Length: 54
Image (cartoon, rainbow, N blue to C red; front, side, top):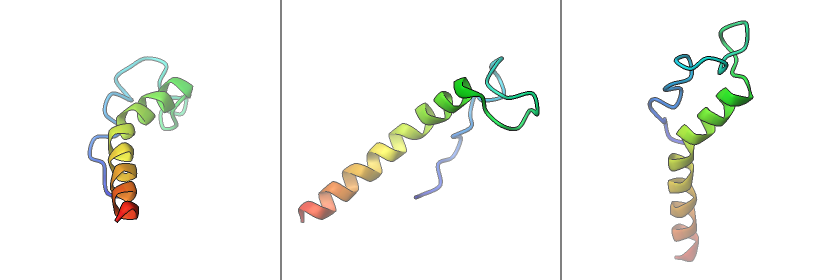
């Protein structure tokens, strides 16, 4: 998996996205992380599918 710069973007900015420890994301924070990572993951899946297709 390649590095995905800025995948934590917006996590600390929104209320309710981090647990009380200020480090671990809540469910809302995890959704944001998933949204930030989705484009990179989709690109990897497409690359793998293209490679498998030959």
